[in-house]
Every structure is written in C-alpha cells, then in structure tokens.
Amino acid sequence: MALVVTFRISAAGVAVFMALALPLPWLLGPLLGCLFAALLGIQLRGAPRLSQVMRTILGVAVGSTITPALFAQIDTLIWTLALVPPLVICVGAVGYPLFRTGFGFDHPTAFFAAMPGGLQDMLLFGEEAGGDLRALSLIHATRVLIVVMVLPFIFAFFYNVDLNQPAGAPLMSVPWQELVILAVAAIAGWRIAKFIGLFGASLLGPLFLTAGLSLGDVIHHRPPAEAIAAAQFFIGFTIGVKYSGITWHELRVDVTAGVIFSVLSLGVGAVFAVLIVQAGWLPLTEAVLAFSPGGQAEMAIVALVAGADAAVVVAHHLVRIVFVITGAPLVDRWFGRKGGI
Image (tube, rainbow, N blue to C red):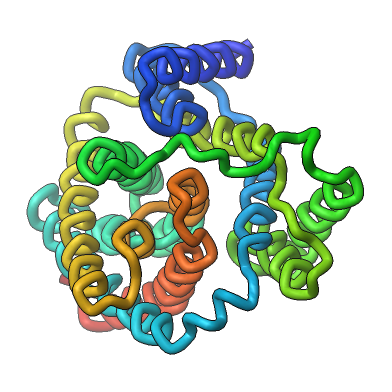
C-alpha cells in the first residue's frame, strides 16, 4: 500500500512540474513530491530492485554516447580528470570541520559524511567505522538532493540552458534490433559487473558494455526517451523516500548539516569549474556538472537533458568515486591511529 501511495505522489509531482513548465519534471517532480510527503509524515516505500533496473537504462544511455570523438579530447581530459582528487580533498577539508565541530558528530560520522562518494559506499564504510548510519544516510541524501535541485534551476534560469531536450529518440523510431541489443547490454552488463564486485554495478556495468558496442559501431541509438524518463522517475523518488520517517531532531541537525555542506561543496566545485572554463578545457555545462558533488546517475541525467557530453561528465564522477572509495578508508584508519580529531 505504501508503495502505491509513493507512486501516486511521485506521479503527482511530475504533473505539477509539467503544468508549471519547471525543469526535469520526471526527476525533480517525484523527488520533491516524496520529500514533502515524508516531511508531512506520510509513510513511503521505495522499490530498490526496480530502481536498480532503471539505473541500467541510464548506464546504457551514457555508454551509447561514448564514441571515438571522446578520445579525441584526451589531451584536455587528462588535466581536468587530474583535478578531481584535489576537488575531493578540498570538499573533505570543508566538510569535516563543519560536521565535527559545527554539529558535534563523532569522528567516523563526520569523516564519511564529508566524503563526496557514492551513498551506499559511504554508508558501508561509515557503519564499519562505527558511524551513525541514519545521519550519514540523511546527509548524503541531502547532498544529492540539493545538487540535483539547484543546478537545473541555475542552468535554466541564469544560463538559459534548455533542459527540455529529448534525452533519447521516441520508442517507435528506434530499430527493434537495437532495442534488443540495448536491453541485453543493460542486464548482462549489470550481472557481469555485480559478479566481479564492481561498485555501482547497475550503472557502470551497462555503461562499459554499451561503450564497447558503441565504439565497435554495433549500436547507433540511445535507449528511447520513454525509458530514460522512467529511469528519472525511479531515481527521483528513491532519493525522496530516504526522508521517510524523519524526526524533527534529524531535520534540525542532520538535514541542516547536509544542506550547509551541500552549499559549501557546490561553492568549491564552482571554483574548479570556473578555472577549467577559463583555461578553455571544458564548456560551462560540462565543467559544472563534472565538478559538482552530486551522484553519478543524477549528474548523468542532467547532462543528457541539457545536451552536454554525458560521457565526459560521468568520467569525472567515476574518478571521484574511485578516489574516495580507495582513499577514504585509508585516511580514516590513519586518523584512528592518530587518535582521531
């Protein structure tokens, strides 16, 4: 019953966004609809398995944008990708004191809350280190929520970026043979990536497999627009549902800390983006999306609908996640040997 209510609220959010001609209705409508419902105390329920399936669609969509033209930019991308680790360090340096001193979180909670990595990975590492799992979940959900909400409105209303561009061709215009290949690539890529233990398997597995098919001239289309809209819908309400059952204390402390951290992180990312644009390495939209502390899936969606190079954006977020996943546990253990901060 709760899942049916969640779907209805999400659909209502899409309808409201469409009626008001607001950007990204299929993503932000469900997200904000479920957020407001959670704050009103309405019981919500996610569909994690189905949401994972929808992420495979997004992985295929990004993978299909990887063409030989991407590798023609390698001389520039080397420099921008090299700036991702310094970005992570700067974000962590801003976030840790905020959570530890400003809001009084214990060391493991503050440390893994300040790391702009994947939500599930930071929850896993934080829990193993003895952090507050619920606080980490709310803080990282808030980080993704704020980034996904703020950037589309900035692009649409300050830089006149058209966020209503079709992310794919209509279903009936994509050859059925390619639809079959894309579907097989989505499921097979996910299963293979999960089998070998790749993080973000439902997104990255299909992405890598589809990229190979695209580079091999096997496919020439993205998934249809209807499939990408469905992926946005499920990813949107999955974020909003994380606020279900929230208490006033959690709203006042955890969510407030997450909001402040998100704004500061966006500021840090903006500094890097400005430097990159000034150097002429990336256009504005790609630079901002590549250096914003949002989730891979959410930034990929915004890139697709904004007409940006989604492959370039996801490449930077992939480096960010790898750097955080490999480096954060080591740094945390070093802090532990030093007695923490």
